[in-house]
Length: 440
Image (cartoon, rainbow, N blue to C red):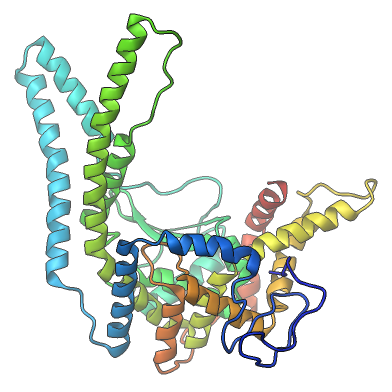
């Protein structure tokens, strides 16, 4: 992203190590030797405050992540059986708690008197709220059927066959700079979600690597999304959301009823605080027990993506994850171009030329990134521990692992005609997503 704090005169030598610099006026000037100005001054203050807030627990988690990377790179990492047994035991306790509560509610309804039956109805209502969420297959906006996107489904089917994974049931697209694979519902419907901004930021080979990584989650041993453990994690998170106390506004005045309501509100909030605190600790325990195996699964998915699309494409796909700010840059540039037009010729942002312009602007911006700026983004991701989310290893470690492995060529490729067909299949969704960005 262009440096908004650029000075009129840019240094030609590093003020710290005196190394020669070749600054690009469009981007942040920095030194790759000593990493001076890796984070621009206007952002460094916020980063320093964040570092100061880093807790001992976060530092310990970072050390475990680094240790796991070294083990995976050396080929000696393995998921500890104790962690999986403990995680399965916690998941079993969660499901049994829901089942026991449901059984009690039914027993009250069948054998109790009128007050107990009312209590049973309340208990079953609570069970309904606390039930494990299995998810449901998406419908409507963003969903592509096989009839609407035969080329895209055909490419994913070829990748799935290569990886030994089941075929994808549903593909949907959205406006996120991400992609994901989920298995939902009692029928265990597989749903591949593609974020169009990330898709447009990648080239054809990197897109195949992106699809390969997501499909690899069906065969990489990741049990976090499994029916038993995945539903337990989801249920526990939902319990916590329900228990988290929310302060309600009290009535005006100091009447007796108002004081009674305030006192009841205080007691209920105090009770919910305790419940939420306990649930949060169990949720953190469950996530910690599955964190090691989950990160191993992500590394495995990266390696499978490399085998399908090539090491170069997989590395490029991971590097593209660092360019999320480029979307905002492209939006600002297109908005500025629209506003600079004469009012008599200005089109609505929803018009096809402007929505196409957004994606072209994004591609042009990324194509114009010099190697030095790309290196800065990778170095910054290492310094800041950038990762897709808390369940993924840091992106720089994922890149480092692919660099440790012998490079492999692509096993699955797309012809120019196939890529053009996929581009056409996604055209309506690109226009809809671009309109949402420009109108936001």
